[in-house]
Image 1 (cartoon, one colour):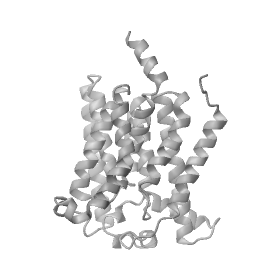
Image 2 (cartoon, one colour; image 1 turned 90 degrees about the vertical axis):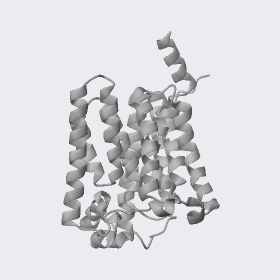
Image 3 (cartoon, helix red, strand yellow; image 1 turned 180 degrees about the vertical axis):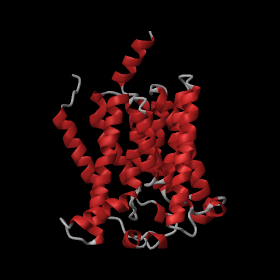
Image 4 (cartoon, helix red, strand yellow; image 1 turned 180 degrees about the horizontal axis):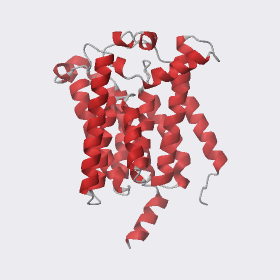
Length: 308
């Protein structure tokens, strides 16, 4: 007998998954290198993280409203509830649009399972990255390129690695042989990225504006240790497996996004990141979830019937 979850079941899974990740988030800690209070009041004193201010702004909205206690930690938690609702909603929408509504219910616990393995110290931006990648994919799928650029511009204020979606947009558009539109998307995306980086560094100069971690990452075993690298690999096992397993039966957009984003994050991590932080790969989760759900027996049968 085929299982067909109703809207109520899907909504319950959505709520439970969000609560699960939020409970795990609350078990984290405030790192000395990215203190949430300093980011709210003196972001220029926090290297690198001081330019990722979108959800710092959300926290400020809650502080100014004074509906809840104006404590910085409460404001941070509330901003992350917004980030969780945003990211889970966008991944659910992406799955409905690119896979099918029947598989949406499975997207939420799958995404929660990926996220809980990457959370430790507090950041304003990590969870929301997932939502912006999913939103950009939905807009590319629907060919809403102006909205894609607007979403890209907003998302870059959350984290600069969203620029990888510019490459996805260009390659996906080139597949339809619309070379002019692909060129416009490339120029506009890079222009938005450059303008935002310049304005942020001008208005809020950071020293340094980015972390150059290449020297340490050349020798990861001596720098991080085997156990730490093993834990990172373990956290990445599920999302990377989803990309590999679902690749054959996925939509062309996902076939472009999966390998490109994975490779892009690996390169960025090697240059600027730290291999003891699997959270660097959060963006991949927005792609891994629909790719795995594209390989369900029902989806595979539907794809095979279209190819026959």
